[in-house]
Amino acid sequence: MAHTITVATSDLELAQCFPVMQELRPQLLAAEFVARVRRQASSGGYQLAYLAADDAAGGIRALAGFRLSESLSWGKFLYVDDLITTDSARSHGYGEALLHWLVEYARTHHCEQLHLDSGVQRFKAHRFYMRHHMQIVAHHFSVTL
Image (cartoon, rainbow, N blue to C red; front, side, top):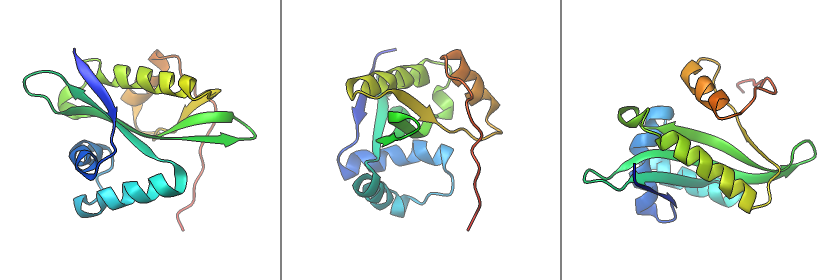
């Protein structure tokens, strides 16, 4: 499984990530995607890393939206907003490779922890995270305004 992981910097790279992101976030619109990513980047440091396969078909197989931050409770941390492997490429090690890349990125940037939230209905994702030594350490609460 040869692949390359890159942080998207150009509008073209961001736009190419949209079909994979839409599998995780179906409410997103292609026409607004790049602008939304750019706003999140400028206001909160959001970055979008993508894994492209180095095979004949090529193409983006997985991606991760993340940001570096710091809090009193966690110290410096990397927060994963979005982590998705396209449905057709699951169980080929792409998600694992991207998760390992995120951990190394966090270490390189002197983070003490890596965090992510996962919807309560995403049982397969939860098994994946726990298989990679992640723990369920909190409940996340929200209210729609």
